[in-house]
Length: 119
Length: 487
Figure 1: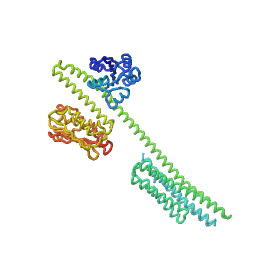
Figure 2: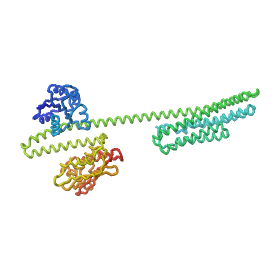
Figure 3: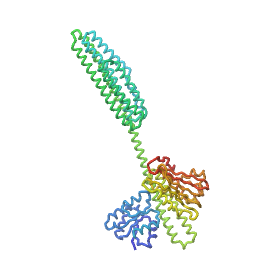
Figure 4: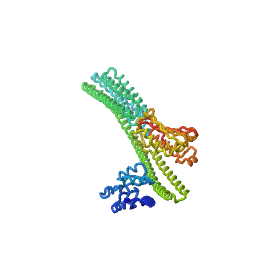
């Protein structure tokens, strides 16, 4: 079973993602970017779902650091953000994200994206 | 501002100065008389007399040229537009002074020739000025201003040279006359000398007045300059404040978008989970209720997206990203996208595309957004018959029409369907057919953004036709300027 690290500070939205994914994936969670990097080191996930607006360290910075880390940079990161205005996708991709999904989340698009990364 | 500069005619000679000038002439005449009585070197004294006399004229001309320069520079510097009055007035004054000087110097080629040169320079000045009057645009004013300055420089140095050489003659000839004096003439000469010194003093004061007028005019111009600089800085500050306000508006929109989407994510997400897992468990009625939550949420999301789009167009931050694309393919793709919305079996969707349709250079995604809006409106309001989307081009304009055999729009409603939150029959239509009432508003705004427009024609009950026109090449042709949405 593939392991996904969910980085999300909003409890309701974290709960939603957990309910959507818990049947098919092994899950780890983090509530901010700094914890996300720690968890990624520790859990070595197969993929990270990254919210962008986060306390302590935001998703853009966490993504940049993960992509600069030799042990983690191979892990695909999908940005999952309510920043859905023009330019937000480019901004996420520029930080090093490998995919971009907006909230409100279209669950079919999410499953499609996951299938795409897990082949 | 401008009224702090008095018209230059008030800077011209005062009565006292004129009286002094006449006095100078009279004194020089007296000198001439003394020379005759005293039987001095007549030839040298005559020359001195005429040189002294010419000096007054030359000082006037020099001064006239300076004043013309001040008027011209003021005109050029402040781009006074088609107001040539100051320059014309000064030009006419100088012309008179010059004519007077030439007629007084008649026969004296030493003076008339350089004076004619000055007149020729003025002909050149007039030609440039005429050209400027025909085309008083800032660009031309800048170019012609430099040419006028060159001519004025020539004029100024000619006049100065003439004055200086005449001044030299005057003193040389006086000296020559003095050298040939006989003993008893000394007293008369001393008197004449005093008069000469006095006369020269007057001429010098006349020249000084030119310099002080020039200094005063420069001072006034400088003051005006400072005032303009102050206004410019004020305008800069206002602009910076407006930019800051616009930036704040953008930041507000971005955070509003983010803040609304976050709870909506939970609402839609959990409802879908309950809807999916509840099917077969929950009573049918409750599943239907969940569907209503989902439809309303999607509606709310659509509304937020649209309002953000409109706000972006309003604040000029909606960017056009033009590329070259095949409009025929775009029309086919859009038709395919809305196909599922069409009432199957009762409505037929047809495309009619001109075979010779050229490639289009515009913002493909914005045209797609407009087309899908028009097509989904047609699909929504057409219960039987057909929807036809046709594309053709004429005179560098791409025209795409969407015609349907739907419920149509009354003439009265046709006038306001492009206004925000308006559907033809108000709330009843909205309840029956859904939609935000913003689709056409944004479509029309997008069309305007691309330099085009959307028009509507309809017969109540007899179907509608919406026609999108955009330039084949974005940025070429007449842009549509009545963009605003009035929000």
